[in-house]
Image (cartoon, rainbow, N blue to C red; front, top):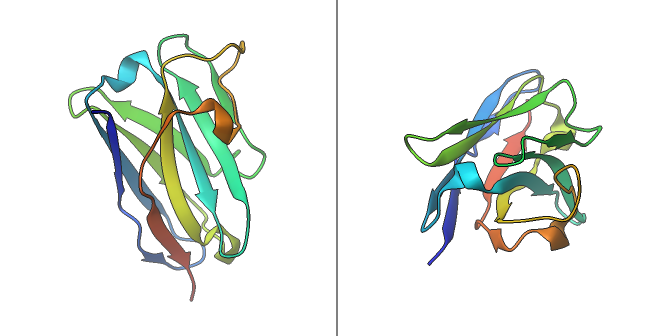
Length: 127
């Protein structure tokens, strides 16, 4: 069974930083493509960034560029989303997702490309 479990969501102040974790079980992340998405209250699910750890590509949405980065911990079979300079509009449920393959040159920033999803973790940015 393939599972993804996010953690690390919390209340953060504007301008602060936060690290989210996504732990995988049942498969090895460094052979897959992993992405982070978020969904704000009343909003659509938004793609943030992805990394194809086998093919070597990455892709960042404009909302993530310069503030969000993604890294992998192969020892713990986890990926992390580091967020800086947080804004109130970053308030959302954050999800990691994974797929074993994609047809594009760069990893996709569309939710239908990803087969496995975590349950989400809540991030609230407020003073």
